[in-house]
Length: 116
Length: 187
Image 1 (spheres, each protein chain N blue to C red):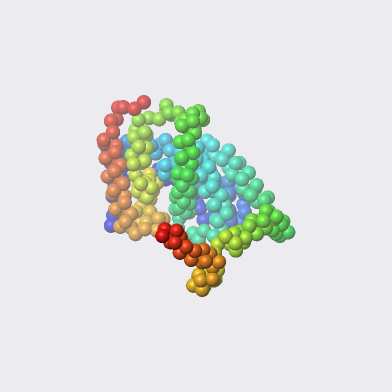
Image 2: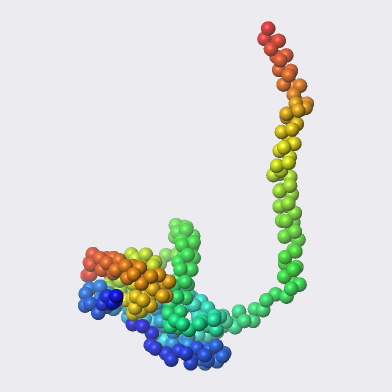
């Protein structure tokens, strides 16, 4: 399949617009030298930035703030989130009727007496 | 409208070997085309300079991995397309902040109209802005960078038929926008 003729060569209004736009966006080599120097500076800076030694990376990984955050996270996980085992235990206690508060509920029967 | 052909294979070999002058020649040969392409993809002139630098940093880092099955210029276009997408994503993230700055009257954030822009360039920019990102890429690669649809298909990793359809749609939109706008108006 052949490609269509390019708009630029069509002599239409769209072609005029495209031509003007192409001329405007064609970058000259006016600022090329400056761009090259900026690029070189960036490349050299990144080349000189050697990777941190193992010891300092370890120190960063095990910093007090990180350990504190880890401990806090563990605490939240263990204390505030109910574990499935804990839920089972609670269900067992309720089915046994062994709650001290159960008596209180029975006491509600006494309330009936007040009505009479 | 494309870049002047440079005898790339030798130049690329020298660059991979670490020849500083070769790198400079490569940069001088391909920077204008990369910069123009980035601007044609809708990146503003100021951002385009930075984006172009990022593209060349990638070229410097990964040139030894470039397999040379495709044209070097096509590889540059590919890097430019990825970089332009990154710039667009960053701009989308910064847009709410920009709006806030404008709302609270930061004069630096107000963009002043460029007086030297001719009406036809303005029209063209408007018509290109009406295209979606992929349609714009296909349109610019075909109409301004003068790549064939098969080359574009390889570059974008799409079937040639899809590229041709996208090109047709993009051309239709472009011509409609240009036709519907008054030529004499504007600044």
